[in-house]
Image 1: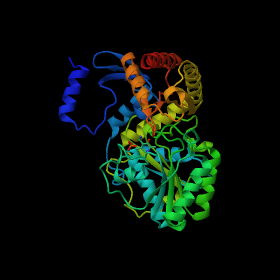
Image 2: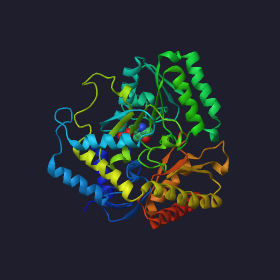
Image 3: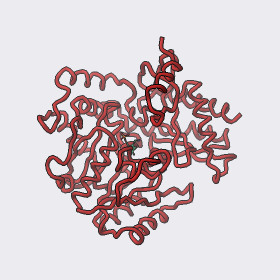
Image 4: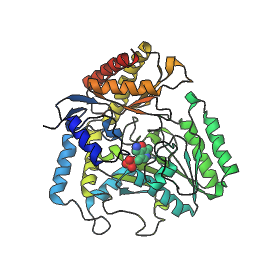
Length: 426
Ligand code: PMP
């Protein structure tokens, strides 16, 4: 019989160490927000495969849609001979994206590819080169994805040189001393010190930084970015790979901005665990790359399109956007109570169900506590709770539990988190 320790030993021998693994656990099966490992131990899943399982593990409707598609056709390469689910998915995603203009959409397989493609479209459409991204941002592990990512270790360390013409502005983070005015000024500084605005193709940002620590920009900030982009003819890209598909209480987080980005990237939860990503945006930009310039062998596979269509159905049938808000509120209430018991917890925040707490030594905002964060996660997994940390200071615990989780699942997870905190603080 397989054990976690036995599989870990095989893994260590066969796989490179650069491929991280947060916990020494091998999963056998999963249902909704519950997971069982190869030794039969049960876990509550607050990680959701890093924001992929907004509709939970093995949702029966998504499983059924994928099985039905498997029996029809599972690969043609869309650019050779096409299939309807791809087109239907594009139509439905376009209809859900904000902005009072004609839109188009196309598909890739991973979040990083979607980001790369959004930059390709922006460059082809503007005939400009430069891109501004943000410190603390995460955009993927491909070469351009790494270049856009605003954190050296571990994502960029040893992997350069990176593509040229990428500049990093400051992402607003008042808790750590960066106001929204500071962030806007840092963009003006790039225009002054590094590259003229007229050569900037795009500004790309996450509406809420995911890997960076669950910091959100305000609608006012997004509106100022929109105005700046309009002033200089720059394409505004919202990277919604982690925030998208209902996590923040709306289908897309940028719906809450009051202004629309020109291009949007999605991946992760849009197909509940099947590999597909999307670029959605202004038709006049999207039509600029030459035929053949976009696409990929597996991009928008029939299987993944069927899964993504089922995800859209499940969101409607189960009213998951309402549920996202309710899950977020329940989590924030529980975490707020935890914060009264543990001084280390100095910030409970979240947009919809994209919720996090931030830990500081003795509650001192100048001392982010990465060690305690690690210990809490380690204590949690022992007790059967899968937690994720994140943040530029590695002191944030983030929750990406399925939106389909029951209240009992949520409360059980919160109780386990409290026990993990007590053990880690002792
Ligand atoms: N952008 C964001 C905002 C992400 O959170 C991620 C993944 N964590 C990516 C891009 C890259 O996605 P993938 O790992 O599917 O390439």
